[in-house]
Image (cartoon, rainbow, N blue to C red; front, side, top):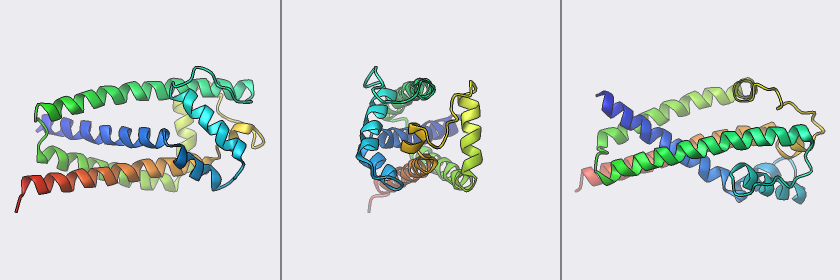
Length: 192
């Protein structure tokens, strides 16, 4: 029973991290989020550079950020690279389980329920996103280099609604992928 729950949990977090990484690397999605509050093409170029930097595709942050903003971006990069490492570990574990045929329908059901539960918690969290956003930064950036004036370039490019919509989209995509996998597994296990 405990093993089944752990496999379900692994699948759920694999799908959430997969969704996060899909959206993190989707410039079209970022463009849509940024254009909700500003259609400055320079901001889109900044976003492309920032995305390459924080995902490790570029070692240089070629953006006219202040020293404090660059320091924060370095911390964000370290956090994203850690997330990518964890995602790779989860991916390997997931595909080993698939290869060895260790994933059963009950694991898919458990992972779907876990993602739905996390999705429900995220809906509640999104209602209090300002508090969640501040708490997240206090935990993951305790050095305090994450607060900037509204006039700063970083805040102009990445307003809080960018992160709130990114957060919601990640969970929505996770739920969607989980439902698709759940439906496929039901069809495979109950052929007509």
